[in-house]
Image 1: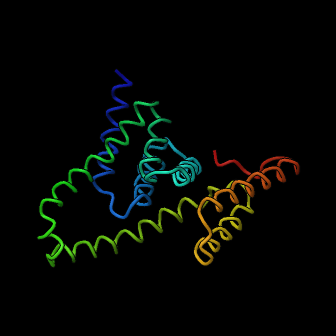
Image 2 (image 1 turned 90 degrees about the horizontal axis):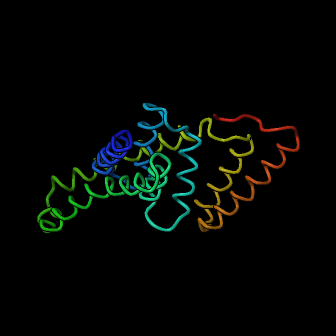
Image 3 (image 1 turned 90 degrees about the vertical axis):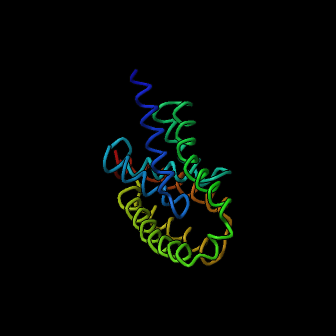
Length: 190
């Protein structure tokens, strides 16, 4: 009975997340952070950041990847599947409705204005989620410099995400090894 309650809660949580996700995978991260890190305390910022890193690196939709990872962590394969189902069901139904009325929607000034407003609201939500995940989620001080270098490489030099992920992996291993040889980890976010 407890497992059924957990699975139901996961499905309903991600049904809600899926219904109110405008702006892509990063807004899902913001909602997950608020719900699972701040309110429920079942995740730490560091764990969510790890899920985002893996979810972003895998092929497919980042939000679905993160939902699968979180659901699997909480309730195994069934949890992962229900999180994905809950998350994709609302947008799927909305897209079906929109496809029937696309001609009227794309030229309607109210719809155009509403979409512009939603885009404007999503940007600060995404920036806030990213900023809050950065604070306190790096185990080693050089990680901030690594993040800055990767940001510059991606934004200004258009380096492929695969190479940046591999660079981050290598830098993380080298940094961890350095601190381990120096006498242990600087701090653990747990």
